[in-house]
Length: 595
Image (cartoon, rainbow, N blue to C red):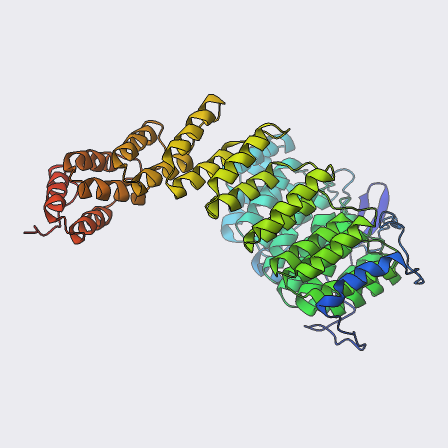
């Protein structure tokens, strides 16, 4: 026996119990073995696969024009007509819904009351209380107050009473109540409120449904999550891309890879639109967990289902295989792109170049650059930035500068990233003067040097001990309206200490304190140590006082470390004086007087 429900002018049959038992068509807990062989493509042949795009003609049946056109299948609800609820076997059986010859119309109000199987004594008392005598408007006002005050259980009981009284609950309150129960992990109660809302004619939103689906997935209740997804369309709120992505990701998290593939195939056959992002996520997860061979097999299977890969999907595979350092697999993906009538784009090439640069495969990089120059996707500023950054990391500064000059000669304007990368490499190599020349060149270009740029060059001069030029740049950036930050000041402090100009370092520390910049324990330590070394204990005590009153509030261990370091350097008298001051300030207690 079931309920007759009128929903949007259509009669449907709602089963009394949630008894839909549907499994995925591909059971199993792991990846199925691939019955085909893939020829290993060595790294040196990667560029041959790319180069192949200039001569090959596509002869496969599922060609995609430029990866931009997809066959979109209209969404047709083919699910069974059933109630929207969580599996009843996971409900609290003492509070489950039951029915004895009831008919419900969600087009208006309930025709007959909905009874409970078992009702605790406290709930029976509530049923006989004032809520039963209230009208619908009054009970909805109370319901909203319960929800506003976070009284979830009271609100839930009131909704049950209203259902018995043929009253329609306030739907926004129902949604808030469902979300509240989901957040505290009470999925059974959330499901019951959802059921009443649906049977009363309400339509939950995607956010609410997705919250429930996500919570079910986290608890490993995959079949319940899939059942709820199927129910969404029946309630007038079809699942969206987030719903599908949540279930697919959760299946992979639980190690049921083949079921995830089968789930997506099943949804496509039921009329689900072939969402690009969902398809891409699925293929990437298959590649990550099962390998590139299985991913290519799934690509072919999905094409049969009318879900065709495009360049975005392929680029995702290229990126994943490159991050794993599997350049042979990346070559296989590129070969598949070409063989299906598509052409690698700038993202594909840049991804390959980035990975090859990270591994130091410079010959392959040169080959791909040559190919790019012959295609519709010549090297861009992003390409050159990847190259220059990779070369600088390997210490190949000469080649990096060569590519920089090549950029300028080919009217490919460098951006601030290009300049900052080169300036950083020059500064680390002790070529501060060359970095200053490049900074002058930058000032005359369309790019304006920023805080990072100045900090990089200032750091270069502090490394070489040329503090005069470092201060010139410091003053220049202030004149140009660029405010120095704590990194700028820390570079200067360390620079002055290295060049034995500790008193000037104290001046920078005072500026940092005034501007509330973070100095750090190491900064204070090096200044105090330098002052004690020069015999300027009084000034060191001033710096120590700055340290005590700083925002960071170092603990007793930090102070002991600083003083012990000074004592270990042979300045025991100075260490004792500093510690005496700390004791006067009630900061440090444990210190053995040194003689």
